[in-house]
Image 1 (cartoon, helix red, strand yellow):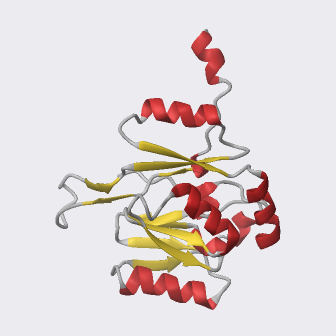
Image 2 (cartoon, one colour):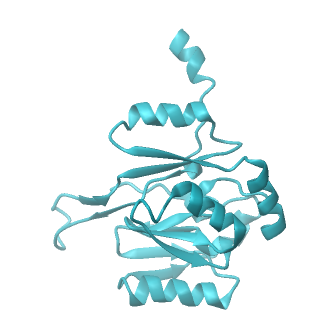
Length: 196
C-alpha cells in the first residue's frame, strides 16, 4: 500500500521526456535487428504535468541513462515565456526536440537560451540548431530517415530546417498541418508514439 500511495503523487507527461536517440537498421531488410545510436540522456521537463517525484521514478527505472531535469516552472522561465511568446509552454517537447541522436532543435530567444543552459547541451556533446519559430522546434524524427514538422511561421525556420534535415542529413522532410490540434495545445510530439 505504501508504494501505491507514493505512486499517486508521481506525475510524468510523455511530452516532458526527451530521449535523443536514432534507431536504424544496417541494410534495407525489415528482418534485420534495430540498432541504436545515442540514448545516453533523458531530459525531463519539470512542469505542471511532470513533478520531481516523476523524475525520481524515471531515475530508478532508467538507471543506466543520465536523467537531466529542465525546470519549466521557475519564475524567470515563466516570465520569459510570457514576454517572448505570449503564453506558457505546455511541456518540454513543445520547445525542444531532436533531429537525431546528436542534434537538438531549440528556439532562439530567452526561452531557448534558458533551456540550453539547463540542458548543458553543448557540454553533453549535442549540436544545437536554433530556430526563430518555436513551433518549428516541435518535430518528430523517424528512424533517421524522415522528419515530420509543422508548417513554419517564419521563412527562416523553414530554410534552416530544410538545410539541416534534407541537405546535411539526407532525410525526407514533410510538413504536417497540425493547426486544429494546436487549438487545444496539441503538437506533433503530442500525437506520436514511436516504437522501434
